[in-house]
Amino acid sequence: MQGGSLSAKMYLVFINDLLIDVELSGKGAFVIDTKVNIPTQADDICLISNTSVGLQDMVTICESYSCKWRFSFSVDKSKIVVFTKGRKQVLVKDVYLYGKVLPVVENITHVGVVLNFKLCSSDRTESACKKMKSGTMALVRSGAHPRTLNPLTVSKMIKTKVFPSALYGCELWQLSRTELIKLERAQNFIVKSIQGLNIRTRTDMAISLIGWTTIEGYIDIRKLLFLWSSLQAGQ
Image (cartoon, rainbow, N blue to C red; front, top):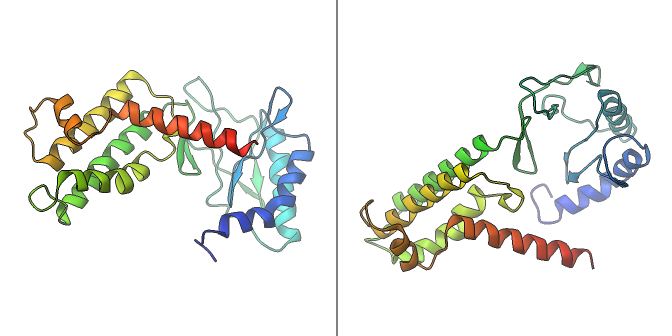
């Protein structure tokens, strides 16, 4: 069942009582009058609190629930990030899970999205650029080369295989102009490589030849699709 299409939903059914217990505890963060203390996707659980005491209370609820149903959370994979505008993270009080102190780290990954304690996304963008380039080069080395395949075919393969992985979660990204430029340069490299064009070829012409948009346009489309699916889910 692990890795199956229904595994995430079935695990949510299994863990649903825990989510209810944490929500009803009154601990953790609120947005106006909406509780946002335990956003969860399958077994990727995140606890959000404004205080270390509130966080400890929620961790204790999770620990008690796991003991009741005879399973355990991974202490090694459980970490704390203190979001702040300062240079250092300050945790007033240690938080314990199964008697072990949870470490405070600079970055965590939640549902595949890297979160930095300063809300800085430059590392995430650099990683996305590297994945875009390396994924494309892997396809080229496997035979998806302009000498053997139509560039339009290769471009479809990249849009369906490389981009979804490299730009995972881009619907929620807030990019600076510098980050957008880095992503655009990565796409420009890809566009010219799969068509066998010289690096000095005009970018707008190279992109139009295969019918792509700018990377900013691609991300905006993903955001609109995400908004549409969210509105549909609420009906």
